[in-house]
Image (cartoon, rainbow, N blue to C red; front, side):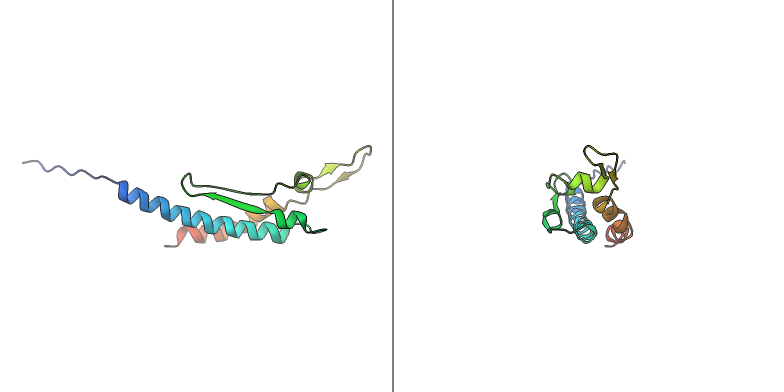
Length: 110
């Protein structure tokens, strides 16, 4: 006599996805805080514009800003009509670097 076991993992997968979504939300919050703290402040516009968007269904997050001069700060730039350059001040990339250890903890905790 053969025994047949059928595993239907929908419940497990849904629970796993929900858990990952929550951890992704925590991760995005950590990176957003670091980016805001690392952001150079003149008027505060750039710092206040840093935002996160988490899609728990697709398990993606975006952390950034829609301020038009942000890439020039993040990556540096050449001054128009000059040979001088403004060095990069990476506030988004550094936020990720500073968050790696905490992200590991978030995803390894139950």
